[in-house]
Length: 137
Image (cartoon, rainbow, N blue to C red; front, side, top):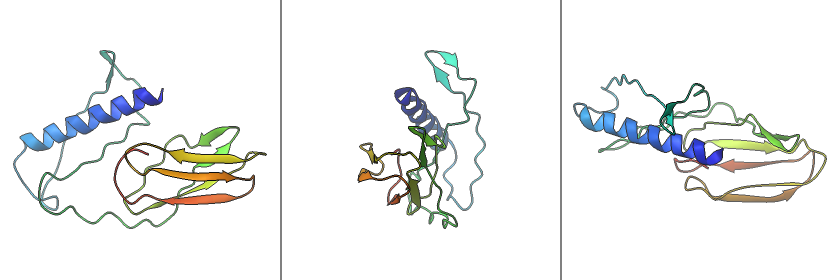
């Protein structure tokens, strides 16, 4: 299932990049982007895209400053699962990983976004990760 999400996200990033390449060159502060994106899996339209995320990368110039994070989202470990299943944060933002299961957990990511390994930590405790670069983690 994770591989499907990654393929969908890669397709979305490519579609958005192509849309931006074909549009007139404007700075991010001046541009309005209007797009229709269709998610496909094995050639069939994806009906539920509620966990799809799109981020845009500028083709040139200096990217705008990411928005200031006003709250720290929680990705809770409960019933041997993460809740919610998806969290989106700006570059520089933090995520809290509280352990609500009655046993030790380790949270890690080896993806190209932010690589991290929080090590084992016990029930009732929490760890934080700051995401200092864009990407999927």
